[in-house]
Length: 364
Ligand SMILES: Nc1ncnc2c1ncn2[C@@H]1O[C@H](COP(=O)(O)OP(=O)(O)OP(=O)(O)O)[C@@H](O)[C@H]1O
Image 1 (tube, rainbow, N blue to C red):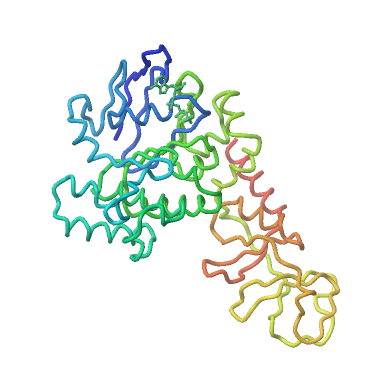
Image 2 (cartoon, rainbow, N blue to C red):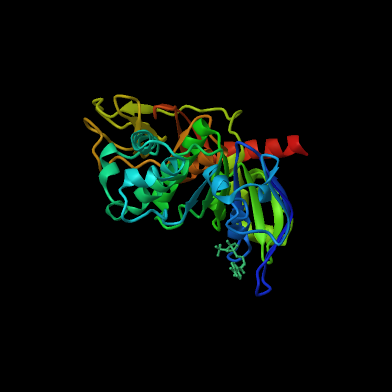
């Protein structure tokens, strides 16, 4: 656990970067610090590994006042990942990852073996170990940065905008990877970002900072979206917060409906579906597209007859996906699939809305 007790940081020029911060970060969680530029997120983070010393107040890591610990030793227990990975350009990927184990006195062989394991853990091919950082893509460099921070198996990981230099698609992949890693590793992670979408996606708890280094709200993502503490938080979490809040509502209780389906390779001799939409499935019962009402099909449905489907909703995941599947489907019917992507039924937007209303009444 990390505790900030009445922590203030005032720089020499008089700037108050962090103002009387009182909060605790639970062990084994991902806690995100989010807020507009210059609101003290990085300063707060760096006070945890003593790269910056507080002007007032106390920071505790696992109950221990960090002023009493040796900064170099403290940093070996606390992994640190920064934007653009901050890798050593003249060391190979493997040697970059092995840095802290070597500093801790491991033999070169053991450190390299550990580095190779970590390379695999973060989803990189073993052959990348011999390359230099400049020979990797931005996303791959970030993965190496994460592997390097994990090398000494520190209980705490500090991540300062680690994914902000990569494009949105790669970024989502890295976020998923981090969530997957965390499910196995169970570290105490503090993650800084200025992107509220990233914050609510990966944070179990989110601390929203405001100008002047003050904490505006500290809550779970669902709470932040449904119950912002004030106008500042409400405008910071954005205008789509109602819709985005659906990411945290479970969809159980939604009843799947059926729709007429045909197999992609089934011979059709006439009009299919009549007045209804017909869903076309492949041999594995994975959805391939829709046939509009009254479509006339001779033989296999041709590509031009097949209307692309909308997003697919995986049964059991959050309501946002169910609503999106319905809204993006040409038939207005959201296609529900199982974990293997096989068709299991359809839902309408109205069903999702009804369920939200039901939940609201229950809560009231
Ligand atoms: N060494 C320093 N000397 C003086 N002021 C500083 C110093 N470092 C940071 N500051 C100021 O402290 C405030 C908080 O900075 P900090 O880097 O913690 O913000 P941040 O929320 O991480 O911002 P960003 O999202 O832009 O990285 C800012 O006003 C910044 O200009």
